[in-house]
Image (cartoon, rainbow, N blue to C red; front, side, top):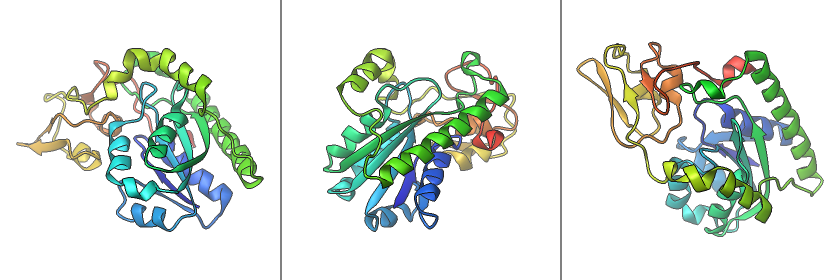
Length: 253
């Protein structure tokens, strides 16, 4: 087994790594940004693919990765993990259908409720202990899913017509357009920014650069929230107007 993931604040990374360890202590998970990821997938008999749901859709960077490597999925067995802060409906089914369009065999799916990564929206925040409990519950759910997979009965959460209807009417019909393309709405407060360059290094899209000792953003944000959650001056926002709480999986383990 090989795990691959795209992760903003570490939720999907933790899920993929934990799943791989539970399945086989020698298995390893790779970020889709890792140069070794493609070779690892080619050599795997089973791939676990974890990603964070955005508005009940697949992030643009993940869709582009799948399409750019379309030959990689042919006849590949894939188990999809969708991590979410609130609701998905058919998170695993969304990526599953995309992979199936490139001839992958999607054998199962799993939905994991995790600490929310959207740092600039107060309504989505939870107490620290609640987030820690969410991670524990997700780990237990992973252990159960691994057991079922080994027994030949993989979980199929998020797969099927009813899940798809829930995802569409629950969020995607109203907000799905927000991830149709990369975003140009990332905002950097130039008065707060100290030009440390941390955001520039973290951005998976090379969408941020430091110019004249200040960070500036372009129009290719994939809404992963890495920069917002790691900015030492809380100078970056996207959906909200101010940073409420910076998040990362390390806080909850």
